[in-house]
Image (tube, rainbow, N blue to C red; front, side, top):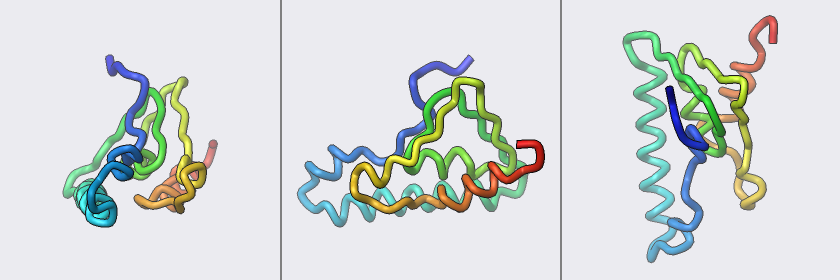
Length: 105
């Protein structure tokens, strides 16, 4: 059984704030996240993601990158970007809309 209080909460804002070169730090994390999203969305086999807790920020894009996403009854999705003065990334706005638009939801 999965454990922990979060699936993924996206980027660490303290890491970015403390970085000597913030732009380079953001670019490096964004590049790694983009590569992970591309691998998940273009995998030659079906990808199933399962979330049992909080998915926030870029974690939403990661969680919803699968072909099938299963969310537990205690799962929460939080678009936290705007609270930090940022705009949503990691494909989360489009992925969230696509996942929540399925019939029966």
